[in-house]
Length: 209
Image (cartoon, rainbow, N blue to C red; front, side, top):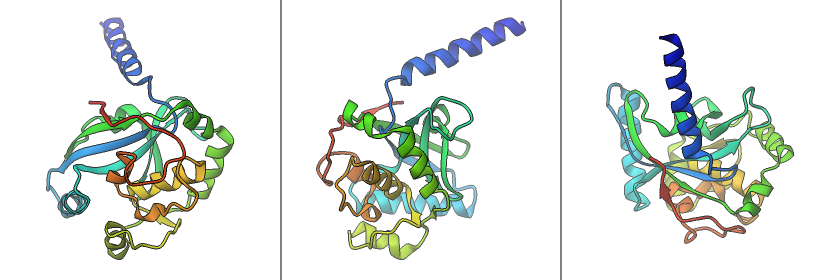
């Protein structure tokens, strides 16, 4: 019985690996139609915030993260999502990022960078960015959010919301133009080539799940 269970786990793990092995470091992850269950005040706040992002930016995308394969600081090799959370920057296994979590449902989309993008995400560069952002905090300042929605914010790197964090990493790696104001970047801005100056090409958005 134990052998059968282990076999089933192995098959599921292999299937997930095969499904997402096309993702490489620097690929962009976007969450769509994020809904929390309103079980507590924080969830209610997140639902309101998600609604504001979707309305003000005219998009259904409300969260962003980056794919990192075999992060040099990770204890276990694998494919991870690198994102900013309330506690700061964090990597989580991609399989955890793409599935619905307790109290939250959503759909995950991606954009693939070209090989030129992948070459920018060297271990040396990733270690440097990991160190630079290790003390960064989640930007929960309402003034920063409002300024970003109207593209009037000042660029800063001590705090980020989700898409600003992704924009910062992409700018530092040279994917986005050097003068990009990452503090103004919304998930919508990362969903196409229309809103930012990209130095390297990405695919169109497609659904992962």
